Image (cartoon, rainbow, N blue to C red; front, side, top):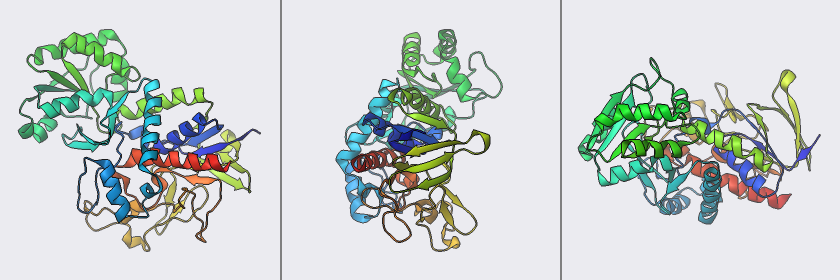
Amino acid sequence: MKTYDVMVIGSGFAGMAASLFAARRGLSVVQTGATGGIDFSTGFIDLLAVHPIAEQRVWMDPFAALAQLRRDLPAHPYCRVTDEEIVLALTEFTEFLGNQGLCYRGRAGRNTATLTSAGTMKPTYLLPCSAWNGVEAWESKARTLIVDFHGHKGLSARQIAEVRGASWPGLQVARVAFPGMSGELYPEHMAWSMADPGRRAELAAAVAPLAGDVDFVGFPAILGMTETSAVLRHLEELLGKRIFEIPTLPPSIAGPRLRAAFDKGLPGLGVRTCTQKLITNVEYGEDTFRFTAGSGSTAIELSARSAILASGRFFGKGLKADRMRIEEAVFDLPVRQPKTRSSWHRAAFFDPRGHEVNQAGVETDELLRPLGADGNVFHPRLHAAGAILAHQDWMRMKCGAGLAIATAYKAVTGLRDAL
């Protein structure tokens, strides 16, 4: 049995980033995991936009927000990484995506307000290049047409106009039939169909009479599964307008695009991926971990000198819960959680303080090595990254992908030094 340098447990943002960073540093990597948050992503890479949560204070300078967060919340995982490490991690991550044909764009040191399917403006740090014209349209309040489709439920142009109308008087909306399809439409089918130049020409022909005097046209994010930039350029040529995408409600195409980029790029770096296999057993000694991935006749045995736990919380199956307590699913690590079951949630669902259960997770040392029940490092070659880390509410703080990528970078750095 081959012994890998690193086992990455998880296939969300943190797991993919950890596999990328480890492989690019010359380590042999095997990765397992079920569907993770990346599959349902909007495609935005948030760094930090809201702190404190209870005050709902929005920051356009994420690094100023990080400085304040580190003063206020010394146990937060962002206190384990420096600004320099964050910048290096995000740069390496997005350069890899760009090499796979998935371009990202942002403003150095600044969040950017970008349009969502609900019509709200979300502050984010990096966004797909396919959405950038929408940023410029909003900021200049340009004459813009938002197009949606009969039978597609992931985005309503009318809702966007109702939310944004007073602040964007040049906004217009239209609903058209999607070429070649009828009935209920699914984003993945629509995106794949955009690979056909003929379908793009049909779409442009349907939109052109409605886009007379506008400068920009926004579509739901269905403009191609893998060659979005080429689809956008072709539609711009056909319509004579600047085109942009708006992420749809999950499941959107942004997640499959990210997944496809990693499925394409990681094997070329030597990463072995064990798709849709959870770790069902682990044994470990001082120098080696032995894992069972999957169950029954499809189970496989894997060996590694170190491991990165990037399994997420409940959605990624990194944490599991019964009616009374929360447990970590692979190593049975202690989980920082509310003392009583009744403290998991507040009475009001939209309480601005959030819910205590959303900060449950694994405690670590400064190198992101999980702590055992005695408060000491559980294993010197086990590190953790991403949503499974305690003391952070990534959803309300708007820091999910950035936190995952940065802590994966930190974990790989510490792990490499220990091998």
